[in-house]
Length: 192
Image (cartoon, rainbow, N blue to C red; front, side, top):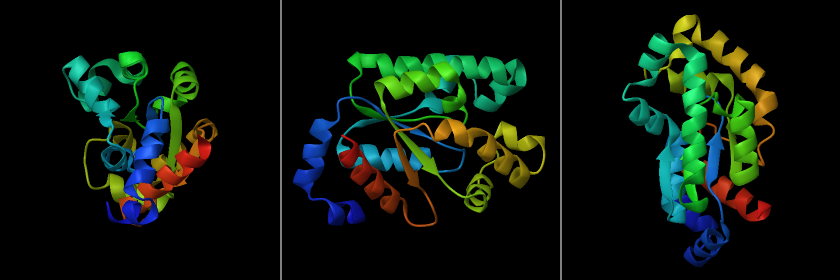
C-alpha cells in the first residue's frame, strides 16, 4: 500500500499488528468509507475484515432495506447489536477489523461493548462528502425519507456526541483512502 508503506516500514507495520490485541471497530456516518477503508486497513495489518452490515444480512437472510421495510428500524438495530456482539466476541476477541453501520455506535450497549472490548475508530467526513458518496448507491433506507443533504446533516449532528466517544478520530476526506488508512495506523500506534 503506497502511502502506508511510505509512512511505516513493513517491520513497523508487523510490530504494530503484533501489539493489536482486540478488534479494530470503525464507526461513523453512512458514506464515510468504513467498509472501503476497513478492507484496506485489514489488508495492511494482515487481519481479517468483516462488514457488520453484510454479516447482518447473512444472519437475517434479507437485505438491510428489506429489514427496515418489513420490521422497522428498532428491530433492525436490535439484530445489529446482537451481530456486532457476536463479531467482537468470536475467537476470544481475536484481532480483526470490523466496519459497522452508521447507527450502530448510537446504541448504548453496542457502544459500551465496542469501547470496552475493541479499538474504536471514528471516521468523520463533512456533509458534502457524505452526500457525494451516498449518492453512488440507492441502498440507504434512511435517505429515502426526504432530502439526503438535510437527513445526513441532521443525523451527523445527532450522532456526533456518540461518535465522539470513540478512542480515535480520523477525518476521511477527499484524499485517497490510503491517506485515511495511514492516519488510522499512526493513531492506533500512538493509542496502544
